[in-house]
Image 1: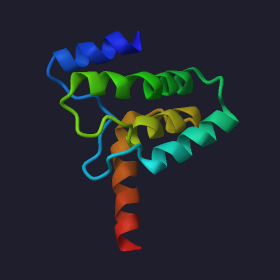
Image 2: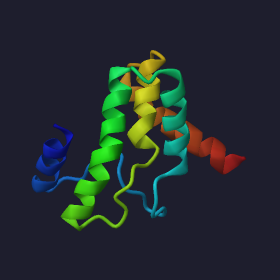
Image 3: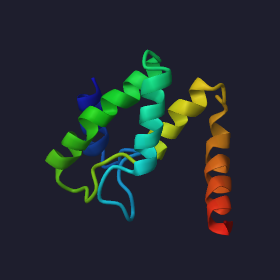
Image 4: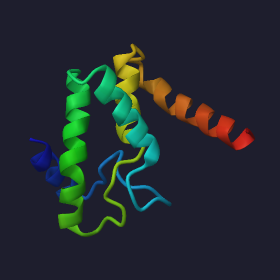
Length: 108
C-alpha cells in the first residue's frame, strides 16, 4: 500500500525520495515528459505502474503531513523507472548519469 508506506517513511522522520524540489513549486516538467513517454510506450510495465500510483498518492499524503513545501514529484521520481525498463539496472550509475546530465546542461 503506497499510502501506508509513505506515512511510514514520514513517521520515521525521513523524506520521500523523488518528491519535492529546491526551486519548483509544482510537478517537475521533466517528470511529466517522462511520465507521458512511459504511458505511451509501456503502460503495463509493473515498475511504471508503481511510479504512477505514487504520483497519484504521495502528493496528497505530503499535503496532509503539512511539512513539505513542494509535495510534487521531481525528475528523480521517474528516471529510474525508465532506466530499469531500458536495461540499465546497475543503480550505482544513476548518480553518475545525473551528474553528467547536469554538467552538460551547465556547459551548454
